Structure formats: C-alpha cells, structure tokens
Image 1 (tube, rainbow, N blue to C red):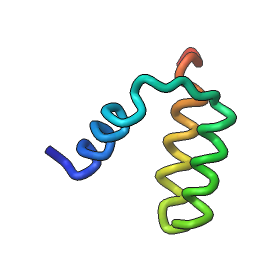
Image 2 (cartoon, rainbow, N blue to C red; image 1 turned 90 degrees about the vertical axis):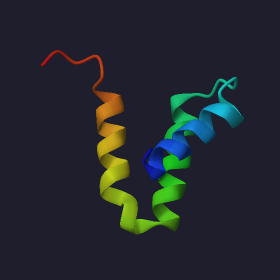
Image 3 (cartoon, rainbow, N blue to C red; image 1 turned 90 degrees about the horizontal axis):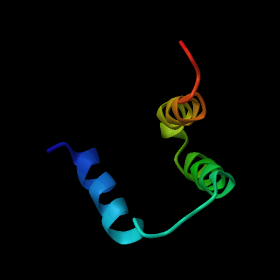
Image 4 (cartoon, rainbow, N blue to C red; image 1 turned 180 degrees about the horizontal axis):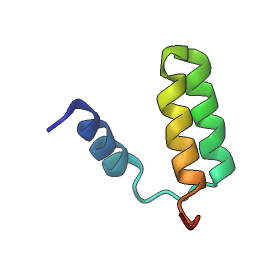
Length: 57
C-alpha cells in the first residue's frame, strides 16, 4: 500500500458520507496549495483531470 492510499482511505472513512460542492473542493485545494506550494503541480493536474472527466478524447 502506498502512503497516498492511506490518505484516500482516511478521507473516505472520515468524510465519505458528506456531500460537498465542487466550489468548496476547489477552495480547499487552493488553500492547500497556498500552504504547500511544492504540491502545486500535482494538485493542478488532479484538478484538471477532475474537470475534464466527461470530455471526449
């Protein structure tokens, strides 16, 4: 198991029943990047991937 897998599992266990808006998620991601600028590129890639999930290739 990778370190990140534990984070994803923790997120699901702690907050999996909650419903949030994409605007809330975007704000949380921006706050995270502001506090941890070294993670800007992976967070931006994740956000772009999520934004384009329904796009046809």
